[in-house]
Length: 326
Image (tube, helix red, strand yellow):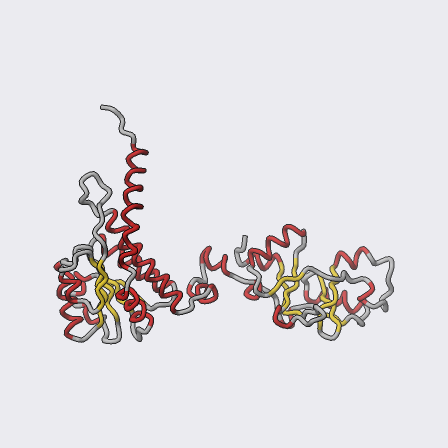
């Protein structure tokens, strides 16, 4: 038996799906807009439902909606018919996926929704299906050719259902003005949360920050540096940043000063600073590039015309590593 060219087979399957998925544009009509408006105004939860492969799609879309701040959960229609229908509230919205639209397990769920006037968005590919007929908002998916040899296994049909759900979620994100800040709120852990952390999330603030006025003597500055244990002090003039003195600066200048010399004589002017909106990973990158262990954080909104900046905090490399920023 000859070995088949599986790479060619896979490429042909991908080519077919890509071609068929272009049909998704037919879905973006007034019914799609109605679905976006209905979900964005939902006072309860978006309950996604489906059986089999459509159930897996519904579960994924529900998870996506939850991740962008739209309260949602997946409900198995089979289990719903055995007592779980009580999870559906009048304020909720049903988002039901079924490519055929005639799945038996969904019918009782639809009857329940219609009885209690629960709004339903039906997503199916058959215009005359039970799901489309029973839904308040009818999302008619285009007929697509499956990419398997029999043209019967759910492949392209599941892909286009998933594509619709993702496009719906993205439209809702725009509708609700979803931002990185809100995304970070729902993803505090894991790699996504770390990627979205900003300087203001990890910086040292308040009494932990070593600050001295430029008129203070260097002995006072060194004692402040030792108290705060960050290896530096920020030198300010009228509450604006004017320089920085590190423990390295102090050691190198030890032969040149007396205890009464002003700290401004030995400070480094124009220290490295970042905005509090700078990402934590970017801050770490700057530290590695400049070979420093700390960066001053300033509030960009409060920079004066003279380019004087007020200190908001300090980002230290040890704290970045503790947060898992790499």
